Length: 108
Image 1: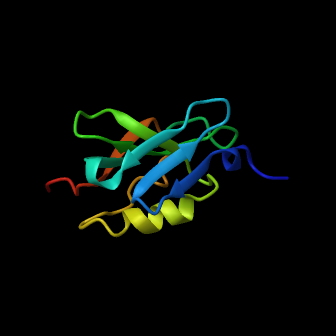
Image 2: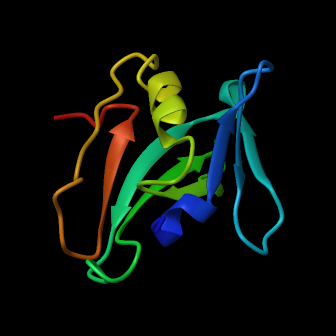
């Protein structure tokens, strides 16, 4: 049986856009040229809930695309995000309600 997160389908398009099709929601999308920050958001709902989320924000700070870890197509989206200079996956092991900046890399 597939996990519930697999119902979220993430795609990187030929136009360099990341799209998420979430169950019973309008498509979410962001062009890579409009991407200003990437976060991992964790919460304390695991292991029964979706406790790790990717948040892709524009330059206003608004989350344009959000998808859970284990979403269908997550690997392709992460492959594209890893091409961003300084991109670093953070916070994946957190079991708390927290947000971790992955890009741009936060100042030390």
